[in-house]
Amino acid sequence: MVCVESMPFEVKRSGITVNMSDEAHIFHPACKLSEIEDDRGVPVEVGDRVIAIFRTEGDYYAIDDTCPHKGVPLCDGLVDQKSVTCTWHGWRFSLETGCGLDGNRSKVGRYPVRISGENVEVGIPRSNSTHGEQVRAGCNSE
Image (cartoon, rainbow, N blue to C red; front, side):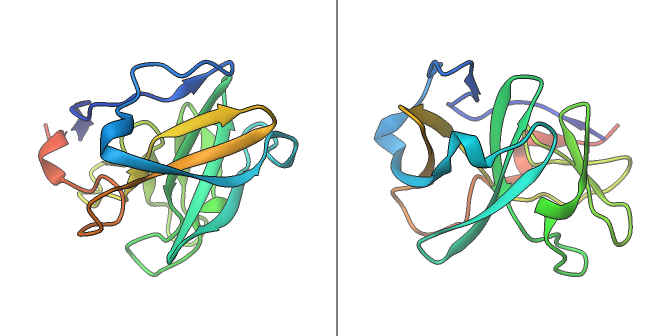
């Protein structure tokens, strides 16, 4: 499965916001930079959502913290090459797109991240109709 980036925002790199679509999201403080270790997930509550924030290869990512297979927290997953693998059954998701990898046709919501001083902020869609950017149209199987 290959995921194609089709959303109007990008991740945060080295503390600089790149191509963020602030009109579509409301940013909420989620945690402190010091709380996020490299290649580890941090669970945070933003409103009624539980989101996992990751830092890997100098970039920050936010995805829904629940594996769609059995509801296991993805923040506990194994991080490698900008993906996270669920510890229960090995389902793997791209941190960049939320798309399932390795033949997994599921998708988890993803959220834009920005850094404000020492705080990590997560963008929640202004339209509360979905959790994260979950449109499968951005995920294509090969």
